[in-house]
Length: 233
Image (cartoon, rainbow, N blue to C red; front, side, top):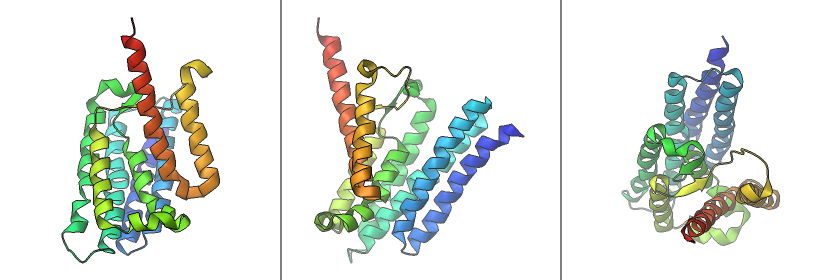
């Protein structure tokens, strides 16, 4: 019986993605973020429980990718779709942002066969991308300064293409997996956690885009420092 528990949690992730998509297509885009946040919790728990119960399986791995495709690929794409649609009369523009779902599928497929991603990610993880996109409406509501950008369809399309590229880019990103808790070996992990907490405390859900951006920026900084250190004789 216990071998089905992780898959049940993964299925809950998938259900969140489907329900969230229904709400978004009805114009309730804020609900999309709520369901992505809930799905992210299930996505964490399914892997955590599988490791605790020692019941990892190939079907669980495949089911996880399929669920992530819906929740962290399709759902954020439709959030962007509705944001663009509500700010343009050009029928074609909203469809351009669906590229996020396409590249999310490529990202998930690459992750399943890329053995390099055991201790760090290569490219932005689909949950991080989905969290960034889905919480943009909260950012616009909390900080009106960003409204001028987040109501601009061309800015949103540019963002969709940028994040699609980052999903599959050969960009090493920090994974919050600790082999030990020493400061010297985990300084950038602690910086990511600290920066994220600050943004969440100050802005709530609206702070998530800043947390994701800081995560990407700190990962790039760590990669550059590591590369420079390796080239120094």
